[in-house]
Image (cartoon, rainbow, N blue to C red; front, top):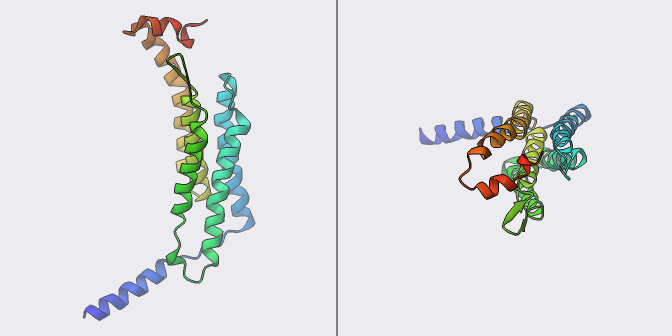
Length: 178
């Protein structure tokens, strides 16, 4: 009986291994959505006067999706795809983007700059990863959430700074410079 269950589990496992065959159309759609969503986030950053703009965000989402697509294409060519793990590529992307983002954060006279840009580039990499895997709903929802954080949170922070315990910080904060 145990051997029968093991045999059935092997059959189920082998049937669940779906060979990923991406057509050129699939590639174009995934890359276009990744670039489009990155560009939208970059547009908001450009309008906010930040250095990392449309091209930077589009390149991060594009690069992330390309690396995921490469891993899926390579996975489809393997004779035993159960031994490969495309999630390792995703974790490598996250580490690499984290390294790049670390170079964007600066501390000058106890003031931190570039932190939001670094965090948003990291999120953009996640959006590109989602597009690469074909998780478009997640990518679009994440893009909308990112834009809401950039816009809505800016107004909330602006109001809250009026009630800050650290008046020196609040008075010198860029939101209060009209």
